[in-house]
Length: 212
Image 1 (spheres, rainbow, N blue to C red):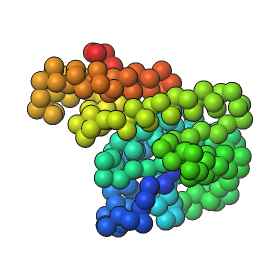
Image 2 (cartoon, rainbow, N blue to C red; image 1 turned 120 degrees about the horizontal axis):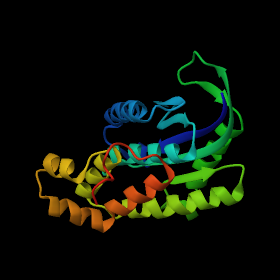
Image 3 (tube, helix red, strand yellow; image 1 turned 90 degrees about the horizontal axis):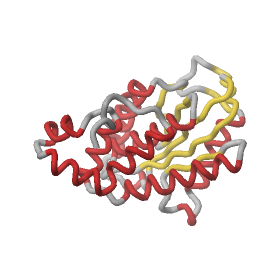
């Protein structure tokens, strides 16, 4: 399939979850939803165990997909996503999941393995690519972004997820049944920073960024 950004993810601590089957069904539904929103080069789908994968045409959209999947599952379940840029070779396009490998796929696998190292225990997204300097800049963004997400409460997580899907603050206030002022306070505590930082590397969706 040529040059892509492959995403390989897994659930954190999945063996300890009391209802693993229910979580797997929820994950599959979230992957379908994000696939519909972002139109990836390869749809997001579960693979083996607690893993899932997909592929995108650019790094920015891949980082957005990783964040959207994570937000849809938090706070009950957390995920890690390894992203790898490079050529992907699909050996059997009829199989589900796709039977594939190639430098891009292996880079994503290496990124996911990096997240399993003790020094990355708090990180949730990592990128490997052919340009070390570019990869370092992407990972600097991802480390800061995911750390900000970790500081959000349940409402903040919902507001950020809605904003990334294109909802305005007025839309969010109506959906949450709270005042515009309350929404604005949440945005000033980190939601707005994550949204704006993400918009710098991936195309904004809808009108969610038009009001501050």
